[in-house]
Amino acid sequence: MLPALMITLSCLGFSSLTQAHLVPTVPLGPAPDAFDDAYLDCVEEMEEEVPHLLQEEMAQHSLLRESWGAATAAWESRRRELTLPLGFRTQHAVAVMVYTNSSNPLYRELNSAVRTTGSSREDYMEHFPFKALHFYLMRALQLLRAPESCQEGPGQEVFRGVSSLRFQPKQLGDVIRLGQFTSTSEEKGVAQGFGNSTFFTMNTCFGVPIQALSVFPEEREVLLPPHEVFLVSDFSQDGTRNLVTIRSLNRTCSHFNCAYLGGESRDRGRS
Image (tube, rainbow, N blue to C red):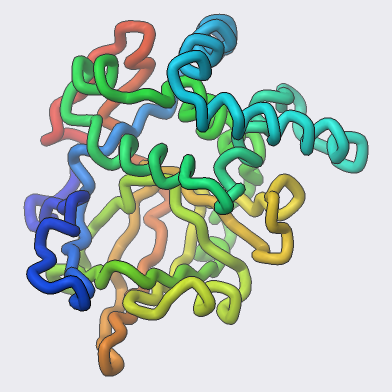
């Protein structure tokens, strides 16, 4: 069970801005409003349902339609070069390529929905416009994850720089989730190029290196799922920078399971 000391992550941290030049401070916590479905025990059913759902969602969202088409073409030119795990489908690869294409804002829209539409199944069904993309992206991370992750060590060290928000834990020892798909890099210098208002050093057990599928392979990206659970092990401030160190507890916490197929959300008091 997630400890009571954890604080709620305000996913709408921009509301704390009082002056345009200020960088808002956002507390790190359990991300209780995140949509965190891991689709346990319903993968085959979802694989049957989601192709039709994707067509419906693309018809309603032009940016998704255009991004999916462009990523599909890019994947066709790259797929012969790669060796992928059993069960890994074209749609899984295309979802990763859609997400990593930071030249369009779709990944921001997806993460905004992930952070804020998990208050209930009804909220997800009515207000989450990327159900198919979420499933394919989660499934890609599950299939690509090395089974031996964290069995003999603390996990892979990765870095993340943030320019627009100053994340801050309540105290050391807090147990948190990031509550969205989170892009990190194996290279500290690459991560610093994305911002220094907050700089994360992380050890992840569920993050997956996606360089081979990324639109920008030089970023050496490792993508983390929304439901991985971390411990805040260090925090300091260097001038205007917040320096946060978190390490994976080698577990996940999902309050939803197979929500699209009717699975109800679990009580936020249980993990």
